[in-house]
Amino acid sequence: MVFTATLSSSFTSAPSSSSRYSLSATSSYCAFPPRRFATPRMGPSPAQAQAQSKEAKLWGGRFKEGVTDAVERFTESISFDKQLYKQDIKGSRAHASMLAHQGLISASDRDSILEGLEEIERRIENGEFNWRADREDVHMNIEAALTDMIGEPAKKLHTARSRNDQVLTDFRLWCRDAIDGILVSMKQLQVSLLTLALRNEGLIVPGYTHLQRAQPVLLQHLLLAYVEEIERDAGRLVDCRARMNFCPLGACALAGTGLPIDRFMTSEALGFTAPLRNSIDAVSDRDFVLEFLSANAITAVHLSRLGEEWVLWASEEFGFITPSDSVSTGSSIMPQKKNPDPMELVRGKSARVIGDLVTLLTLCKGLPHAYNRDLQEDKEPVFDSVKTILGMLEVSAEFALNISFNRERIQKALPAGHLDATTLADYLVNKGVPFRTSHDIAGKSVALCTLKNCQLLDLSLDELRSINPVFEEDVYDFLGVENAIQKFVSYGSTGSACVASQIDYWMKKLEMK
Picture 1 (cartoon, rainbow, N blue to C red):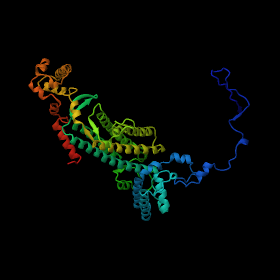
Picture 2: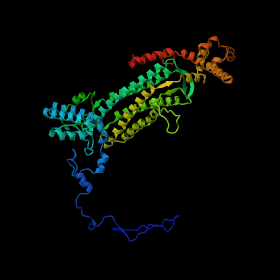
Picture 3: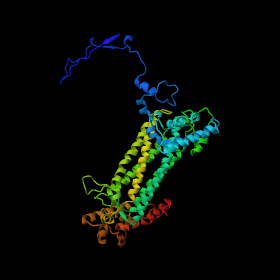
Picture 4: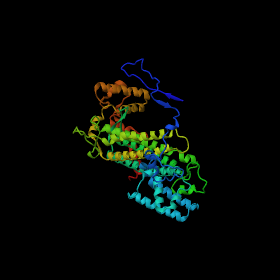
């Protein structure tokens, strides 16, 4: 059955009723072309021939052809997962030792494997190792290089192990090490913030809500707020590390193995708490990286808020801080500019860290159990998140140690906003006035100040009594930002005694004394 057709149409500025698709005998479209038109196959295509000439894959026993260059480029991961080489070698050492202990390989083979792995690690660290894209990933590169080096014993290393459990073991080890590094950087930032606080003892700054002046606070109190946030960030990572610290090795592809391995032995050797209980869960779930990136994203948000505050305070409108030249940049066209660029970038790079988390969440949301190749895409967002958050922590700590607070400018700014109004309300409460009534009286006092263009401290006792007769001479002990600070006594408040206690706590915790 043969259909013949020609497409004839007229394209004009306006649609034409004569534009039609018409059938004719000009060309032939055959649903089932006659065999006489088939082109005989004379051999492999150039791409197939090139693929066949490559090194045989370690998994290629059932395959007659190698993959094409396009497939190889698209599927390789060695360009980024070679970062896992230390963890891969560490896992292989533990696995080889376990195999020998269980009698699955000889002690001689184990020794050859361990010696070969040591040499490969040395070559990698000295830049002498040849990473090959045709060997796909870090695991195949190391295993193939080991085979080139020691021969048959290397072929026994993958006994009772799949790349599925191997990569998860490497990845958990890498993430565990990354968390340890981030925790160190978090402590360094806390130390920098506390150092900055110690340099500015007694300095009062306006506290803001809704970006409107609210109450006076000690600068130390504000800086300690960031120290507290980072401490919670660190706690999330510690918790994440504990849940992460279970070993997938021996889960194999998804179902475990029929060989008599000892998963507890490898788990202990690698510093894990225990083997993961379910082999399918071991190779398919990525909640440990989702939790890790979530913790990083929260940290990034905290650092972004710190960056925003300091960028605002460095502006002419605020003028509260001056960054040193060593942490500032200029403009290519405006010679007067001095920009707090590092903290602007901290604010901006938080978007990357949040994006890395979203990438992983989206990657995992539709995957069936167990392993799927999609999960190769889990590495780069994690590597990027860790690199970015470490940079953000480092530059924030550096910036904190290279800024000065403009005391004179801050002192001139303090009177605006009637920051002692709440303290005035507290005074009235102490006199037995209900808080809502006290709030109203204090509000009327502020309104009078606005009318007179003065501060609460400037109102005479008679003027205050004209609003309410409850006022006495002792009211002036509550007015002015310095007096107001001294009246804060609740636990965790900005009162001088409370802040001094908190400073002492953090100095001991951060081992600064």
